[in-house]
Length: 350
Image 1: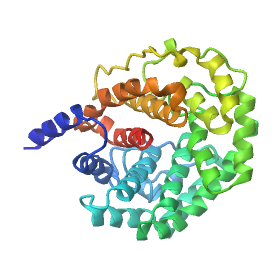
Image 2: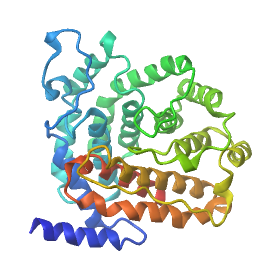
Image 3: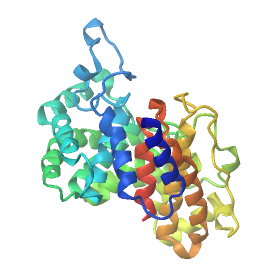
């Protein structure tokens, strides 16, 4: 019966046309819901000073211990808040809210704060997890769901620490990290910028803008043909573009982009999707995420500048639709995080 249900969902996603249906949203919600409080398997990004720090994932991170690792747990929480906001009739709504309330309690957040305040953990989840945390904070603060206001207040002290970390760290970063995985500098600033704008945090905006310009403004001819690397889940070229799109006014951005990615302006531009040889391999399955991240960045670009980039819509749809069926394949290696990436693409699709 389970495999029949997955087959039906596979066909549903394969035939996806324009919008995420309630049935598809219900399924995508089951993935973070299932792992939000699943402690094992778990990958800790912990530095041990002595044996007293050897504790269980839930003890160390009572809020973000599920979904295999800290950052996946963070964007798993974001996925559920996002879905609750957009689908009032989402199945298991009360169960989802209860799990969110349990994990995002003041007491649990304080333990997360205490962990990040250890002197030897100042770089913990820098900047990938930081970026997703501010995405979650933004989703809670913009939600009209009654439960969200309280949880936003609970999370805010942790988010404030992350904001302080950004402002302290960015000037020290003399060179950007351009990989397609967690440490990518450009991606690590996009959600942070969105939250800085929403919250009218001028200090954070100034820090991100000044340092992004310092790191990226002189870049030209990004090597799209070098992508993907073997285990990418982010496009270095597209993420840099997405950051500069946020911080630069239209004329400056388009002038920069014509030097950075001239081929994107071609009406017949083509870009082959990334293909996965083994979705039970936790690293190789990253490439499905790459297709989603390419899609959300193309949607973001064409939504803001339709006259210049409406020709990218079919290409963005192609990337989204290619990997969407893989979210329902039942492999924990992908399903503990891929739903969040798929939803991020749908968020930008509009």
